[in-house]
Image (cartoon, rainbow, N blue to C red; front, side, top):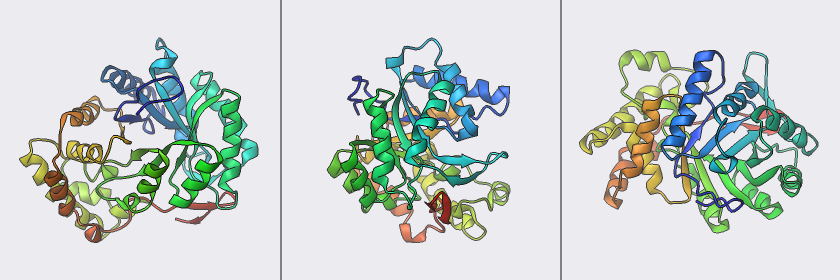
Amino acid sequence: MNDQQNGLELSRIGLGCGHMSNVNEDVKGAGIAAIHAAFESGINHLNTADFYGAGRSEMTIAEALKGYKRDEYYISLKFGALNTLDGSLYGLDVSPHHVKNYLAHSLKRLNLDYIDLYQPARIDLGIPVEETIGAISELVQAGYVKQIGISQVDAETLRRAHATHPISLAEIEYSLFNRSMEKEILPTARELGIGVVAFGAVAHGLLAGSWTEERIRKSKGGYIPLFFEGNIEKNVSLAKKLGAIAARKQMTLSQLAFAWLLSKGEDIIPLIGTVSPTHLQEAVRSLDIHLTEDDVREIEEAIPEHEIAGASFPNMQFRNGKTVRG
């Protein structure tokens, strides 16, 4: 996929930088090393947010970018989620009046003059999407933002946003455990010529590595319904069916998950969210895997959508900054 602003050809896989929250020097160092390893592997797309570690992900990225030319990488940045002091999220602020402020702080933390793609983390139902996107478009005109994106929206909102200003990328959860966007959002994005950044490729870990009874026990709970008591056992059983297919094809389960996403179209950019060189290289090697139509059919039939227990990601919606459904 081509970045029309500077001719940069975006890598087929992007690096998600949510884990690079710089909670200590080891994590910070691992994040910097992961970014450098990504660049060396041909990944030039870094995806982050100003609320990842209350800005610490941005500061880690800034250190990692030292010595690289600005036209060698592409930064996509989300804004608007509100952090508490303990790092959790408590609301959303995508008020048009505050967009400039968020960007000003991000540019300082990243030590950059502009952001390649800027996008609200979610849409506030109490604020017309046209107003939020309109405020970002003013930053495009001023040269501080090159392209506009949008995250976790429905097809109608995507249309309205795109009518206000061309949307370059829509960031949507997409994995074998969440194929809901195939129904309306993906066809709409393709009709409008909008690329899709797919997060959650390994279904929050369900499609990463082996599952022991101990790991299942420790993973129960949290805020992701896939892992709730009574759900995780069913979902791990489905993941093991995929694991058998992966083993037969001589690939890891996570490679199968990425190869499946890559097979869905050149306009889909999966994210690998990691600071592990091993996981990064696993994802990169999936670029060399070709799945036939029969392979894709077998993979999808191994996880029938009606057998998936629980939602893959909480359906968080906001009105006037507060959660109204999750």
